[in-house]
Image 1: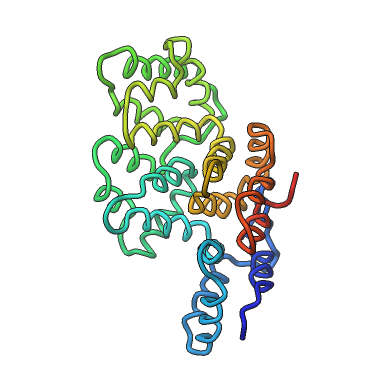
Image 2: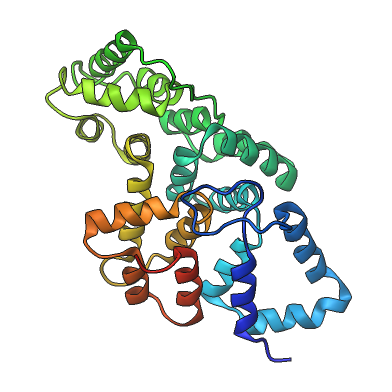
Length: 310
């Protein structure tokens, strides 16, 4: 049977997240949807003999970016993140970009789920793979972040600690020769995002440079990129993803891997806020950029995740 693309659109329209959706999601929960059960059911179905024909039809009907996108959508969020992290560390070389984006942007709860799913899927600890695939201070930062032990309580504003942390970040970096990276790692991986936003603000009263400029002056390579991504995430996560989406589509060619990963992983979380940040900064809508940069069923699938034109 020829594979009908309408089936893809039907699957896409029914793919919704389990539990309470975020108010800022573009994909909402269906009352009978069970992400774990349905993803496993699809996977099991495709492995049985009876469904060999369907599997062959799927393979002949899907390829390239659309195939990547649809395979991502039948996974739960922790399964998808775990599989992306594994792929980033498989074989020769490491895809630091993927590693940094996922580990810097996920909450404690999300990281806990990713760690459990990673062990279940690959029979090894995520931390163990990060250790064997990275080195130096970059390794320390990634391992510490992946543990997901950041303080997320923002009910109390500790002005003394804000001032102390801002001074410590300055003393450990711009003020001295060389950088006390462990001090930076401790502060940036332990404190809550709300606390750190105030710290980065206060930091400007000690340093002639803001936090991002200081990072560029003090560290290089993967560590610099990781710290920059982390600070952007802490300051405004939705703007961070809006910038990443813009980068994936600007100029010639599209960095589809990044585009797919963000569209899939944020559609159930905060896509509406990301769209709003995108339009505010770049003057045109995310929907418009996707329309200009992609085509065919791949484009339609992405626009579905985008949730319509503003």
